[in-house]
Amino acid sequence: MKTQIGLSKSMQVAQTLEREIRSGQVLHGDLLASEAELMRRFSVSRNTVRKGLEQLARQGMITTRSGIGSFVTYDGQMIDNALGWTLALAREESEIETRLLDLSRGASALGADKLGSGMADALCLDRLRVLSETGLGISLERSRLPWQTAFEEVLRQGLPDGSLSRVLANSGLGVASGEEWAEVLPSLSEDDAALMARPAGTPMLLMKRLTRSAGGTVIEYVESLLDPERFGLHLTF
Image (cartoon, rainbow, N blue to C red; front, side, top):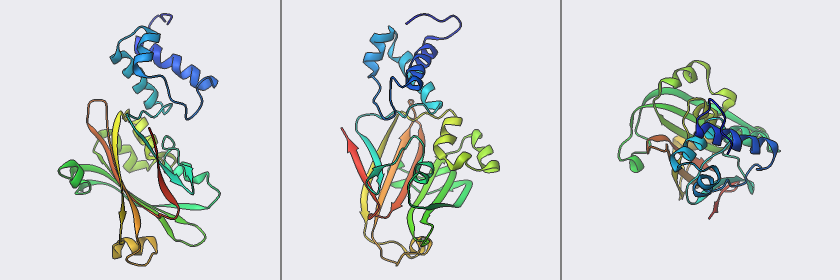
């Protein structure tokens, strides 16, 4: 790696990888080299490599996943998590409408089973996605993010392009690790069934996701109720 005056080593790593992504040398969906390989290639420390990758994540250039990668699918096609579901689903042939049910700041008990407690101060985001032709709900998503000062603008202006992923990138919140759980919810509650225009008792796929920063801080906890006839889970090892 040639030294560029005025740039830290981590920024040089980030800029080199960014050029390769933009030029097509690394294609969308390709795995980047491992941290160990990047350390050898650039002759830098692991911490420097991680800082460079975090910079690319903040720019929305990459999404970092540890260990097993999991991807939600819609009608058999993988949803691009880097774009966010709203933008990814907008590219599907089916006309899908996203309805914002709640965007507020407050305490939340959601995720207490995974976090050990709820969040005393959180950005709360509830969204419903429906088929435009029928009004039938296909997903009900509830996201909770520990409050950050940067979220004030979100409350004033709303989600940029309807994307929570973009909010995280704009706030400098890079996801370094996460966990995901999938289970069958045998029966929708009456309230959720009403929101989704479904009969009470309809079974759903329940997805729970918890993401953390490189320092282990919780970034987001989200629960999604998904129509099992349209959505699935794809795992890569």
